[in-house]
Length: 265
Image (cartoon, rainbow, N blue to C red):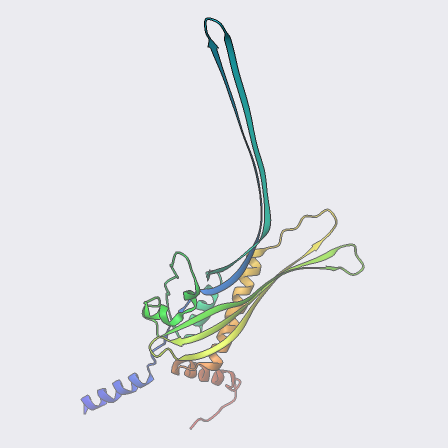
């Protein structure tokens, strides 16, 4: 009888226990077109001189012979234009808050991804399946892979009403396309776009020299991007642990106020 009770208890505990999916958050990949202007100018000059002289004497006559030559060569080359190249890489500044939001949700465990280490990144950086096969995300059940779709810095100015001052608004918008990929089946369990935004505003008056707080702007971008990404994951991907925690949260929100009695069956 005792053994059967222990077995039932163990079964209930195992049914209530939920294995948290392990997620690796890859650094944000990007592809950028870089245009560089070049200007080249070079000149050269080369010259040479040659002289010779000979004398001939005999018993009856004497003669001299002399010759000289000079050669000069010069040239000038000038060129200018634009060189276009494609640059690939990873942004490693906007994933810390995203990992933190996933941890706070208590529905996932975060495992560390390995950075892309190829000496010269190319299109292969976007081949997430190949990177999974090469062991770039050890121990992960899923990989959250993001590609930067847009980066827009703004430096706007607006006059302050009834003053001679100007409002300076320095802002950044970062757009990212995300995919949540199963490392065993390569199935995509969630796909969405998220935007992170941050800004820093200052009042400028004549003669003042202002420097925008880039660190604060980037921090706001990282946090807002993480919040929106977690909302999208919560809406599209529902592991058992997240479903139960969402139900518990809704139950707490719907709980009656103190003094009321509710009977649950």
